[in-house]
Image (tube, rainbow, N blue to C red; front, side, top):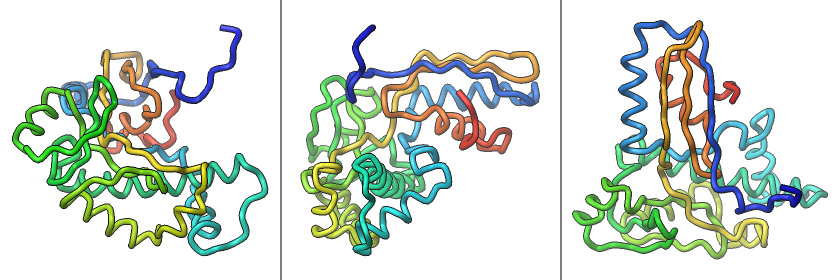
Amino acid sequence: HGRKRKPGQLRGNRFELVVRDVPEDALPALREALETLVARGAPNAFGAQRFGRDGDNVAKARAWLVEGGRPPRGRFEKRLYVSALQSDAFNRALAERLEEGSFDRPIDGDLFRKEDTGGLFVSDDLARATERCAAWEISPTGPMFGRKMRAPEGEAGAREARLREALGLDDAVLARFGKLGLGTRRPYRVRVADAELAPAEGGVRLAFALPSGAYATVVLGELFKGGLVDASRAGS
């Protein structure tokens, strides 16, 4: 339409990709991996493109926000660096959950997001929360640190507190984020919808839909863990 879209107005994206040089005998394993992603969700990590062309936005952000260096001049660059620092922290929290296999299931004190409304809540009934996660009613969330971010409780809260301390993100640093990074929660997993996989000339054709803010390159990285494609450089 004729009006410029604002942040938050985009509901999602549908991707159609052709991945070349995929051996034909790899198709069964790829189909199985895709089915797993549809069932459990894909890790909701931020892709490499979030961190700048040379991948050094986190280092620049830390030099300014954590180490007290000179701030960037432009508001766009400031927002970019704050976002990179938040995204790096989230990816680290997610990596811990992936390592223990809990990115799609609850741990003590988790702050859950309702899939239908986006509401946040803590449950003291892990068995019931596990059932609701399996039914895609709720998903555990991770930190996008900021002054107004709601923190989880119990073990989940203790983990995020340790991460904040390890990264040097104390209250003074979060105050420097200002309105550019007030903080929020981000689900640890993302639903992969309308997924299709079929042979194509010289490779395979993939199609799937993701909600706004999710990365197709991350989905590719999960599917091609065997090294058939460098997902951080894949086009869409």
